[in-house]
Length: 433
Image (tube, rainbow, N blue to C red):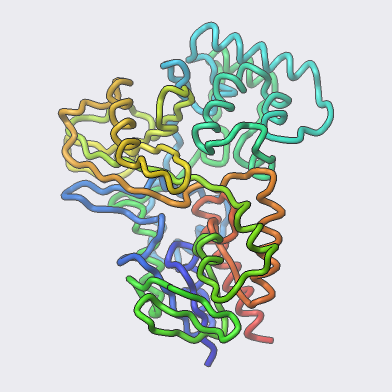
């Protein structure tokens, strides 16, 4: 009988394994953590529940909804209309900023509106070569200077001209001039963007989803750290020396981590491509705080360079995650990979939140600091070609990659589910041949 081994028990790996099991394959999922979910996990501390950074489910495809229904958890998710804001110069205005500048200071609002009109009057010129040119062409100097450039510098630890355009279309909507003018006057009412509506478990945190999938994966092996992969001999070696043979290997772990596990010497072109991959880690400070949340928003984006974190969320505003009379906070700060200043970054972020009037330090009851590494892929100009080189090599040695970090891309939770389904179909077709 054929055995498929899946590296990583995150959402993509779990869905792929669950679907492969339905096709009659023997499946083993190797997950180094003691619980399933990967980055889509929830931590419980007393009566507080914390996710590992913000995890909200945006459903655009009917097959995703059917999948949740098949798992019996569709009704466990509440549907929310997004309440999010952008903070610039200490002033908050609804997200997305390009159609909601009315909440900003007069000077910043004038800069953004005038810059957009000037860009609109110039019309499209030559195709932009990088994120800097794209933003200036699409939104103008004001929005670039006050939000897009400083925010993305904080998030990606890169200059705008270092970033390619492989990621922007779906996630950065462009309004027409009427919407921008209405937004400067506070007249815009329609929510826009892929995350205008989201779903979140009514209680218990986002772990509800991976736990529900994991319940249908009999070959889930937790606390199993992979030490080596031998594609030629088709086995995976665990840290304790155990070897597991496979007929099909699916990797959902990060691309650099997978390459580092492959036994033997990698081709020089693959080594060079591996070195070209860039990413950031994220330090997440999760707080359980007495009292009501200081904001009704689900989350806030902070563009100002002097504020260390790029986003703060109040997850208890959309789920039952704290005891009555308390709330939860999620602070996210981006760092270079391997940076050793995690503790300092967490303390700095918490102090800055208090300085912004969004936290009373005396009311903090629980504090959890987590690190996601990698967290975000940096879409620089080398990424596309480097990933193509690595994908070809992995295909040649019979390894299928799936999911956000394995495919070295940006994707949302629905994409993780759909990637798992697509991978199971791909492997299933190969087995059928």
